[in-house]
Length: 446
Ligand code: UDX
Image (cartoon, rainbow, N blue to C red; front, top):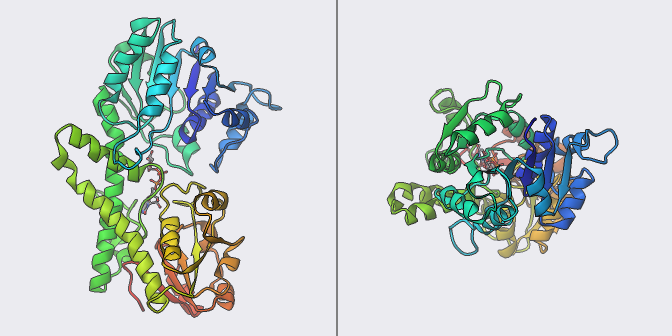
């Protein structure tokens, strides 16, 4: 009989993983400690914008018309322990308040709450991004707490999904990585992934620390790549070069690759910034601080990009924001997401607001989240309304909607035609021919 799956924590990662497992034919029970989330998911809806996820839920959530009924949600730990053979733990690991280190309290408490009820053999699979060494510590804790003792095994199976592509990345991952201690855990995970997911997908079996490190080092590499191209943008800016052409030419080298070489206001979101900081903190604990000092530079280049966008806007406003209207296009940390955690767009908008500018923000999906986080900023219902009367327009999240804007139409309502493309995604020729002064980091002024 196919193993029954539970998913603990139904945020981005968990909700998507649960729906994907149901799509692959498994019976799935999701658990969350927040009653509103359980209620929302049980009605087939998600508390965030993630393309394709609600469609997947509609196909499988029990009680919805025409669904397979394979997916249910609960708040009851005993029910989860009783139901599942394989328990995926997908709770979040935010940055600790005021420090670089990772806050493990959600993972610890989820593992403990679950373990206390496990009175028959089961496999617990950690998917959260954790500091290396966590799995070993948690494995011992689970055996200590579980009534079934060492009948309960732990495995670590990091998840690499990107927001906005969560469904696609879960159903068609680049690779599956599992950190295991025993053959039983490996066999069970091979069975779970012996589905369309694993057909042709590299399946890497390794130990706990390596599995944990794959995730943190992958995110560190991606962050480094972005900061590298942003550093080149600074050099291009000074030397009169064009970072977009530079990135295009670099990307043709297969060893480098074209992805993650888009210069601009840099990386944000709930993963890359906090993961590189937690990684540095962990390296310090392990006594290999120096191995990761380059990540400090990656972080500071990234933060400098935000300051650079503010400076370009100030320059465009004649050196002072007082009495100036600034339109900000974008609030989410990236397109196809309503996530505003550590969003470069909102950070830049907030800095300009604090320096006296009158800021109006528009985003296709992230308005509600942005308003909650920055209630004092101005908000508009459309790009045109945001731009009305603006002295400068900042493009800070590269939604398709913004690429398709008509610069002539915007030019008719703006006070001055100056646009700063902080994502290197707008067509400079089109904007310039509509009479706009077009500026982008690391790109020629003319
Ligand atoms: C990231 C990893 O990609 C994913 O594998 C991991 O599981 C979670 O963290 P995510 O945070 O969803 O995913 O976003 P991603 O698409 O990686 O973008 C991160 C940030 O980098 C965004 O703010 C994006 O705008 C920025 N970025 C990306 C750039 O500034 N330039 C680029 O070339 C690419």
